[in-house]
Image 1 (cartoon, helix red, strand yellow):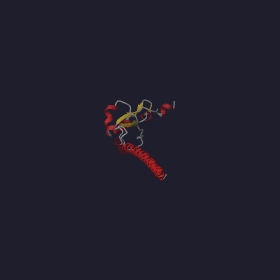
Image 2 (image 1 turned 90 degrees about the vertical axis):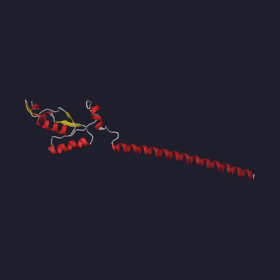
Image 3 (image 1 turned 180 degrees about the horizontal axis):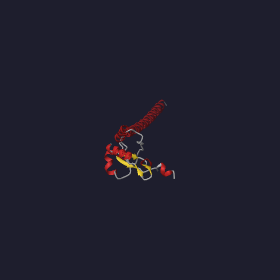
Image 4 (image 1 turned 90 degrees about the horizontal axis):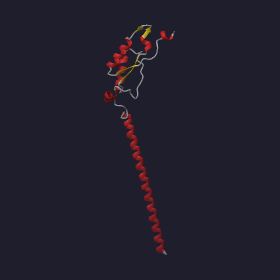
Length: 149
């Protein structure tokens, strides 16, 4: 009987060791999967922070120049002094934008019936072109004298 007890305890010990090894293997596989997911997430975050998923404006200008952009920003430049306006346009260019902000509302150009003053609009368009941006002209709004009727 003593031999049977020794064999039983050895087989129980072997079973427990195999079970422990299986659980250890499972734990290690779980940790490996977690590490792979974490590394992938960190790489994606690094790429996103570096702007890898955004449009490269320099290489996209030529093929997309005749298409509408997929995103944009509206910037009101009419109240700025020329130096501040020029700085803002250069900042837009350095941020990767390649389309200039929309030029004045139509109501600001037509100060009276049959009287159009394009001076401010021309100045803004020249500043946009000087900043190496493509100007976008949006005719919006109506002059106050036209709404009064």
